[in-house]
Length: 429
Image 1 (cartoon, one colour):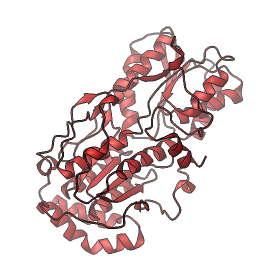
Image 2: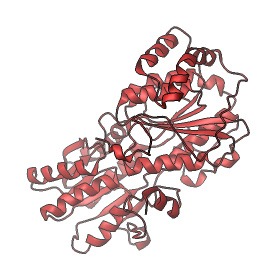
Image 3: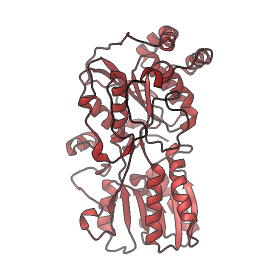
Image 4: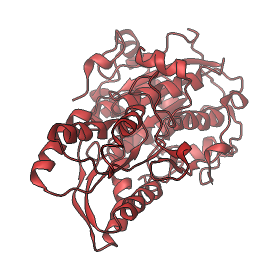
């Protein structure tokens, strides 16, 4: 379960939380508002005072009313509203082609929001802060909101509809429930918001321009294939693998499996003992599950994981059992890199490769939304090509897993564009 103590003081479950460092003025652009948006705002007007005064999201009952209204009216098209803006939705490119938001801020006052499906992990906290830091660079962004559905799809549905009802121009979404929240994104899009789900892979359901403006992602499938190939090579194409997942139904987990499973299946000597195993990306669950797996299987040669801080739980299970640490792939994490450096000499089979956790991609999603609303072309790639960031088998030691003892264990060194000081502030060190 999510750690309720992780919320900022004063937050309630599913709250819409404004960044207190931003200007207090709220402005709404009235020009060229589509008819569907006018209908939506008229419908939500009677609800808005309740939403604002209680700092709670729109209720599910109100969400149902909104859904019924939209079912009876033509769907708006994000492509129609933003048709003259080039956002390069199918462009692929490396991180080096990304830009700063200042060139895209424009001058129209706008409100932006980040809807998170589950905000309790360190990875989510960093992703949120990336979004907030990027948004703070635009003086015309008058309000920055954040909602945490705490793993409850119904809450995220009401969060998204509540943000749209309050007139947020840009809604960046981390859609843990995948297709289950597609209708809410479609309704927010019909209301005139630029809705951008991110880190969803290349096969995310829905229709661009109708259900959301566009998606911002890496090719999760390609990254997963590369990890699986690396594991297979280190195993000399013969060994037993455990594959960890995250939240049940999350599109990242599904995209990862589409990448790694065909690779392992093509090598007769490689056997996936179990996976993807649901963990909720909670290190304590990794530890509990791994302890059980170590008792169940006498021979586990490699662990496939996507969350570096999560797989630290599995490593603690290995330590507790007194067993040699196997081959591992995951996203980078300071704690994971430090652990490898501390244990590599006593565990010669402990090989580690990591990719970027791409927390900074929440910035890219924000930039696409801001550019659309401001009517400014943003031709940055929308599909980011990620390389392996760390590889303990590389001849070049500069590619070995990184460790910075001056930073908290939760820091993600290659996954973030936050400064060291910002990371220390975030984690209270």
